[in-house]
Length: 282
Image (tube, rainbow, N blue to C red; front, side):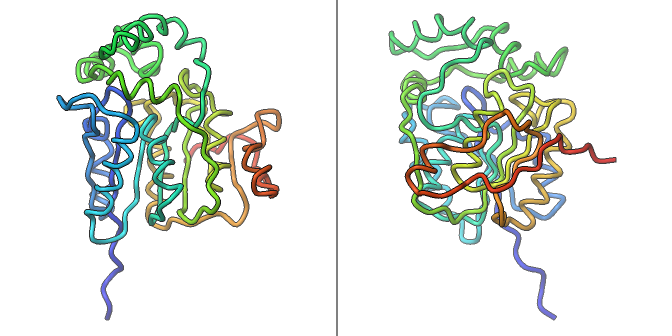
């Protein structure tokens, strides 16, 4: 009897100022399910010199190429943007984009505006920017408190200046073909990435988009993040592109697709949407 098919290797990329420790709580669940799992340290982090967005994209391409079998790239926040640049020209077994920054300029949210002057001053001087405890607590870790918040802040590092500047002027993307199955997960309470912005990524790559109302920008650290993880594990076990463009958890007035892509390809990307919050598992 033939053995079970080989499960894809999951490469996990962290967000800005974070590190592979971001996935410490999720790693055992992937390994228990049989997935080879590796959390990466991205350029510009972990004591490495300053890096650009292009450096991160090239790094991800090299890491994918080094795996002999199928790969699922799981990327969070800014690395989700780098993953989109990779996916625009390369096919993978699957991709999971968690709270991914969309391409193109995105105006800062109100929560981020409070901390923008300090960040811009550091970038203009070409220096790394280390957010204050208040900045981390109100943006990246807005759903954490007590020891969990203390631990996350202690492990967080400064933001590379070149990478920060690249994120502000990231070029727009308009893939001419999309072959990789893509799963986009968003937090309904995310102070950095409002769900209607993140939804653009799902429409751009013709993927499945789910919004989780109780989660914010770092779901792998937050109470309630297990529900997102279960959905991600199901996708990784059988990555498929949807027959229709699926998005759950959005109201009809929360946007309906990537306008530029519709114009360029002449397609009606928004074919169907399952409105209403995805029910909690019982």
